[in-house]
Length: 234
Image (cartoon, rainbow, N blue to C red; front, side, top):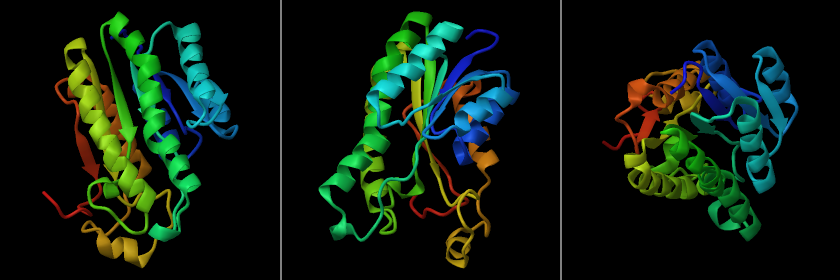
């Protein structure tokens, strides 16, 4: 990896994505940021990065952010696939369109980015992907039915990709956040979390930065829970 590695961060305009961008910048990464609003462009100006407006559900926007990174920096060392929340509602009231929207937002975004970036990483000798998932990926939560179901699928894709590209020094891992402070605080959330507080976006950002770094060089195909003890399975 070069002295100043390059990362793409999607949905970087606010919340977890913006916190990750700030953390990576503080650690010397050069950045290309994308969000559906102008917030990523504004943050990019603050961090001396490149910023684009685009959605992770848009194949053209993903291609554009990758092309921007290569044009500006000539390499891509890390990708953080962050996104918004897929449609919610009672399980059997969700429509086919809701499910298709969720698939584009939380699974195909990662698949498509991997298609675009893995050849670049392979040519340059390696790289790492970090996908922001959810605690509900392996303990389905009725509050988040589409997210729960499809991010379990993301876990499967991540393991398959990680195994296939490990020998090429390309890693992929998922972070499974619990209730984080970019959400409203409620007594119910606090009661479910053994630590008795919401996680901080900065804590998720530091976890992402670790997984992108050489300190995590032997970690791939994993689903790392950063949930304050919320999930019960072991």
